[in-house]
Image 1: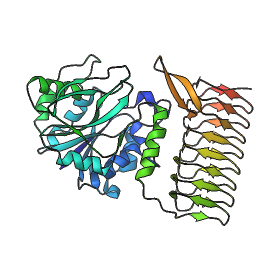
Image 2: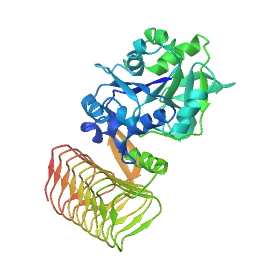
Image 3: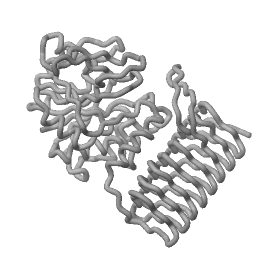
Image 4: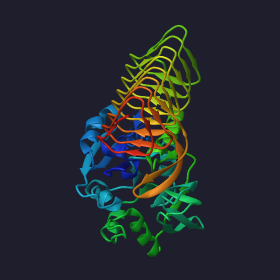
Length: 399
């Protein structure tokens, strides 16, 4: 069996983190989203992968190359114009002549979910999930184990059978794609293709699986996906743990990393390669720290994602936050966490997290970041500042 991975979009609602990379390359569990997807496919014997790329395609292709290091064979297909998921899938038409899977590269999915999708009955199957959600997904209307309609992004809080965007199709889907009408958003969407198939009386089967599936609509949703990804990892310690450091629960320490004396780690925690942690650092559950990161003495990090090459000074406290690659946080910086209201694409949303700091952000000593702070890439924040709300990329905040 073959698989098509849709990985062309930016993931605009995850800005500012996607200002410098596509959503499929955002790290959860210290791996890009799409690496988890590829591993899940490979574990089920699916080796021929067709990845549709577009935005920031070079970063995707540089990381995965031909797929040999991941046990798969990758063919890249380019979507020059982002005209929707049906248009993207159509790029694979000349390569598919048997039943195949379609998955999103920016979702977390495990091998069990893939296995369930492979073995599901029917030629056209949608992987579904029972969720309380915010109206940002398609909702499946199901009768007698068949999908009768898809209500696309109702935009209001509701619960139901959610369309995960993972499918099993027969090759006949490509003819249906040719006949897909333009959506209200001016694009060609797979949900429109499926709705047309339903209208023609074709059987669309919903599969409510028991495997893991997670998405991140907004940047702060990465924290939940990260916690789930850490739960899937086989943790092992390859780096050095000095005498006097304590580790409790599943913790991963990459080769070349050092956990200095007096540090206290409570898993699940993943620390990449060539990191320097401590002394006296506290790292609490559901935290991922990327390669070559540095965390200074007596700092505390909990339920956060710290990306590659980030630096956190001494005596800092970072909670429920994402710190982008190559960012530098000064001594005694504090990121508080709690309920907040965040503006995304001219819409105000209620959430609860600490801060989202994009790549190459520099913050001086004794900076206080209020809950819900979102900082664009390359921003500079002077020592002693109190920050809140949105700070645009390449801007400077002065005390």
